[in-house]
Amino acid sequence: MRTTFNTWYDNKMRSTPELSQETDHIENLLKEIKTIAIVGISRNKHKDSHYVGRYLQNAGYTIIPVNPEADEILGQKAYPDLISIPEQVDAVDVFIKPDYVHLVMNQALEIDPKAIWLQLGTGTHPEQAERAKQAGVFMIQNRCIKVDHQFLIRDSKNPSEEPEIFQPTCNLTIN
Image 1 (cartoon, rainbow, N blue to C red):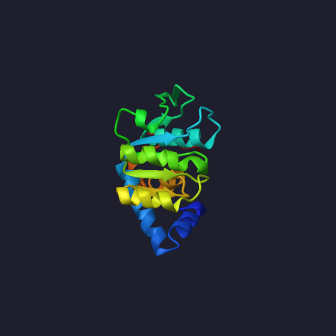
Image 2 (cartoon, helix red, strand yellow):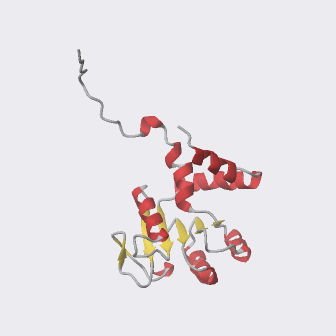
Image 3 (spheres, rainbow, N blue to C red):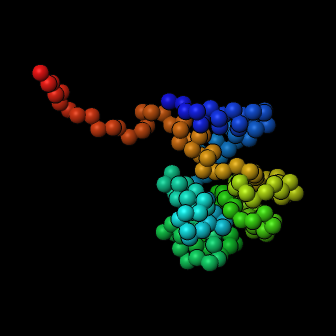
């Protein structure tokens, strides 16, 4: 069943041919990636970055927290920076102040992910988008990975793939 929010999302994210093309690319990306490093993820479970990380973890992604002030977040070892991560990262999700985006971009491009995702609130960085494009890395700005996953992946699942709801095996007749 489509909701008002699904209609809002479709109207907004498919309002131009460019946005629609980007949305299609994001949908394919979210189906392909498995490991997401979240730069700036908070230990505080009430912060957006923590909530998004938990959501993505529950959706089946491997989350790698990047926070120099933490040893562990979401039950996973936290790393001080992207360069310290010993495994391949498919996507880098960024929750930091706009003034520091270029520093994260330097590291992100060094580890060669499939995508760099600048969350809402990190600003618009055309020069960084160009750097990512030149490196062959897809860069997303001013979108939330959780919202895109929720509308493109979670809500599009075939109802037959959903867990069965318990149905009683007997019929009760009341006279």
